[in-house]
Length: 178
Image (cartoon, rainbow, N blue to C red):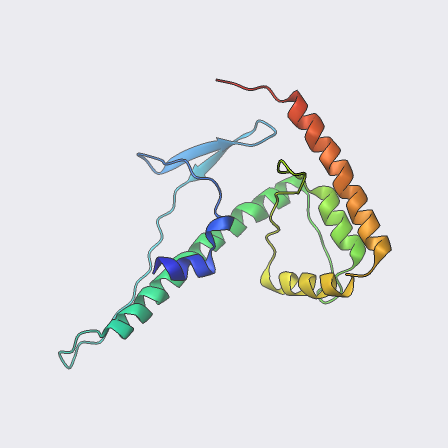
């Protein structure tokens, strides 16, 4: 079941979690210091098995049912994550509109420009793009088409270089707290 959930909602996408001991409410503070409420929602996934003939489940049937439940949990987790992202996008106005089937280089450059990038110790961006499936497919297709476009890659690298400078300045201003 957990493997099926991880196929639908990979562990790498899961945001960092702080355990909530009691209650159904919590909050978090955004970078702009605004405190946002976080309501815990209980998800339920159900399955059934026909036992009219007095037969139990085979191991294969059990595995199939567990996979079905895991996929349902994974889909619910995606809904929560995407819902939070859509709410933040609507609130901040960092929305990218494009015509389906007509993703352009300018759209990608504008999207990277809107993002706040963080970098690892080797200077590589650490962000993960979370895109709707149809946009992800189109993005991969366009990325392959633009692989040899030096002008596009020069613009993209220029934006990343500027974002790295912003990151370094942000990190230099940061205060460590006990």
